[in-house]
Image (tube, rainbow, N blue to C red; front, side, top):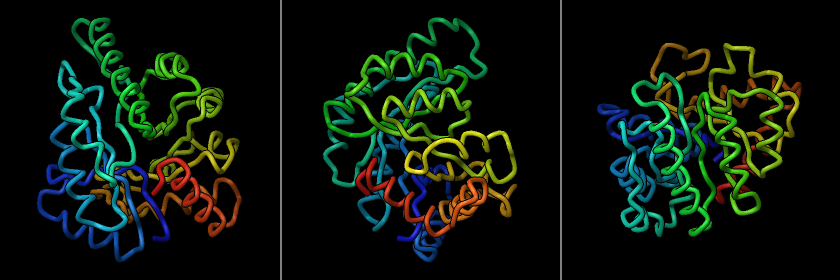
Length: 254
């Protein structure tokens, strides 16, 4: 494994026809990945995929926008977390983008389910894979209540430098997607935080990087994200590659 994509989606619902090809490409390009559950059913599937493949690991949890009323079934997730291939809990967090209906009630439900997963991660000594959209302040406030007890990564980080530094101070890392290959509003954060706090991800099958933009994304394309991080920082690609492998080992034990 020369590269690792720390956040991708490889369930059959994401790749109904070519899942096997996507996994073959991953191995061919010496890329490992952590595949993400967003529901109990997805989480069950990612554990199965991870257990069947080298250099693929699983993250299990419930996305904050999973249905109108997300539910975290601790009993069922306890059956999954015992797998040695489960390396994180999530993606969990808060997502306030385009909420409608009783917005305050929805936010409270999201917070409750988020807290359940934080406490589950502490109980099982697993890092968190955080999803936060239009909700950085509330996400920070909740995590800060568990300062010193929690660790993990904010996936698809799109906050500003001040927010980045606050989450790093909490003990979290930040990951960046292929969006950085065609949008410049991530550059300031990438340049100004320590390299040992950065990961590359694809969020496949979404947001494919240049030169694959407009296509269905896949984990093997994470190499382009590595290249762009090195370019933005003005650093040697090989040094960046090696450090980000160390970062994944440190945070997720992969």
